[in-house]
Image (tube, rainbow, N blue to C red; front, side, top):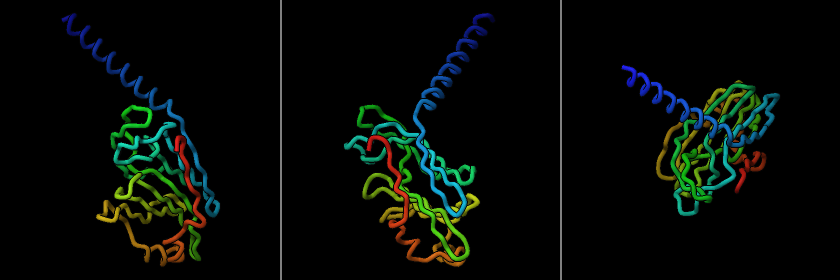
Length: 187
């Protein structure tokens, strides 16, 4: 009976030590914070990324090595539903990273209210892009996640945004002139 207890205690200690090491490893990654002001609302993009890129031989080459991203709108945390994929990095390690990272943020002002626009990129021509709009109270009100071949998910329509917020169709289609570009270490 003593052997079983010692074995169990040893096994539990091993798993606890592994969990603590994994937690410490993730917390050591630097956080990068990008800030956007939108009609009195504070938008923070908190990215956890290594100072590295995906290797050129990989499907998502050119992407930053980001393991997490949180979009905070007035303190409310949001995460996009983006899968993680294993990719070889330029430094030679294999890491599970986000398959799509935020590359732009914008405040789209309308006659009835404003929206926060978030644009995401997957790292390759055939990789899906994610484009979404959040209300100033932090709710995702519209998004499209697709590539030129298929849709991976969507919510709402652009007409809904035009009617509810009084935004211009042109601003929803081309916000590049006023969008904040997001840059990453290593790229």
